[in-house]
Amino acid sequence: METLDFALQMEIEGIEFYQQAAQKVTDPAAKNMLLSLVQDEKRHQQVILDLKKQNPAQLRGTPLKGVKNVFQQLADEERPFIDENDHLSRLLENALEIEAKSVDLYYQLASEADDLQQKQLWRALEDEEIQHEKLMRLTLEYINKPELVLENAEFLYYND
Image (cartoon, rainbow, N blue to C red; front, side):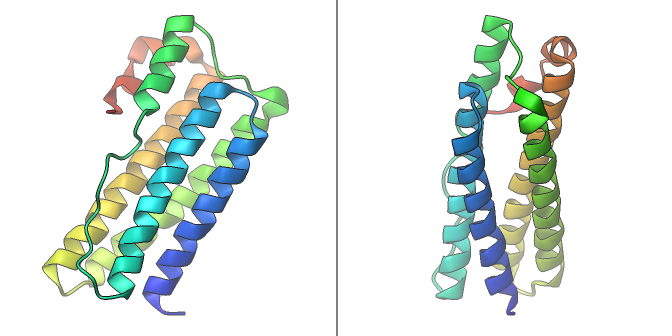
């Protein structure tokens, strides 16, 4: 499979994973976070499609749009995510694996790219996937120890 096809397939699988996950979770904050990730993966998909068509590719939009609001709302309400039967935790652990694979792929593609613009694009995608990884870790921490995460306030790092 060609590298771009592989990257495209990973993004499609990410979109499907987050869409299905959003349908399954009961917590509205978790649902909003997952839908935000769907939008990010769709942006990544479009970049790769542009590259495949040899169109000028550019990463547009704001990554993790609205995620800060999700955590701020939880903090304001002083409540954790609803994690029925550890379903959300397992889902996030799977998402963490998906994001780690994406980080590795985009790192490899950036390392192999000869074209400076493509190298920068792969690095930008890698950076966004790293942010997704951090979000998964932070959310898992928040589920397990919400008081520590609120004290840390790292969630404020995520911009709108």
